[in-house]
Image (cartoon, rainbow over all chains, first blue to last red; front, top):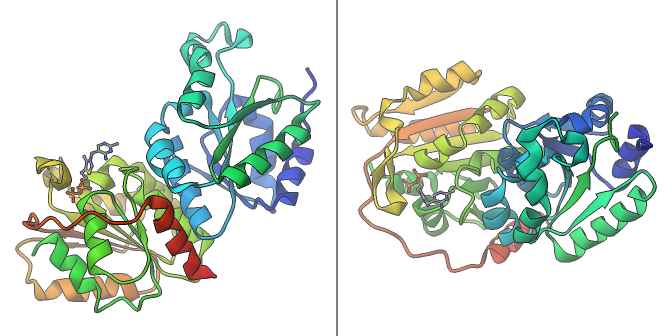
Length: 167
Length: 187
Ligand SMILES: Cc1ncc(C[n+]2csc(CCOP(=O)(O)OP(=O)(O)O)c2C)c(N)n1
């Protein structure tokens, strides 16, 4: 698989008025996070938990800013109440990048297998629109996701498989 | 002194420009009914008022952001304080209304009674934490509230309070209206 170039990816986010990011790392975002931490167009704030990151991003939006978030799909299990009783309830637009772990490349990582199976059902249950990105279509998908995020004023999620944003 | 009385006292100290985030349950009701302005009254997301306050303080660096939180909420989101300590946002003020209870759900105990808040918060790297205990003179509360809001820098005030006896009415607005009212303050 060909990887998305982190510099292109960050330029896209910068061009779309993102200056702030928070989240909890996943190795699937290793390259992106290395580039993000070095890029002065952005402030990346490491959170201690994914629900905390949702809280920070919500506060940042209420103050007039835009946030993209980075988390592992295991983090989707940590953000249930933050999503349902905060961001869906108050209608807070957020762009959330979630690693899609627990698929075939993770067959030696049983800790991810069940969340891998339920990732899409969990997003459906949270009523979060989601897309899977590839190196070949990411810009079109992100354009669409941002449009939906603005139009519905709610969180949207981008699922990122192994090798797409990091080796 | 009761939690609602402490929140009432704030009305004489605030200038109306502060951006307030209040924790879910009784505290948000009290902030809605007893303080002025369109604020962020949380209806759910227990544990997140400090995180939301941090994000707001970063997006609005020229405004004072005040988080008013119950001890149950504060403890649920405790690790957010370590992030606050790391960032040291100078416009963020946090007031913990500690009744040692989950009062909203019927007055069950939290674990607050065994915590030394000042030592804990200082250990996280926040030097400017103050505490009010039941045995302290009540006159001190007003001074402490004033210092917490008005002194420059990240300030945290932990207040031991008695259980409230009156439950105030529900907040009449839908959360999207709470948000819209709040955000219209910037336009
Ligand atoms: C995740 C979650 N768990 C439990 C509840 C139920 N609940 C609502 S308010 C509350 C108590 C909050 O306690 P505290 O912040 O100390 O405020 P107090 O009620 O004492 O004023 C609880 C447990 C909830 N809303 N969300």
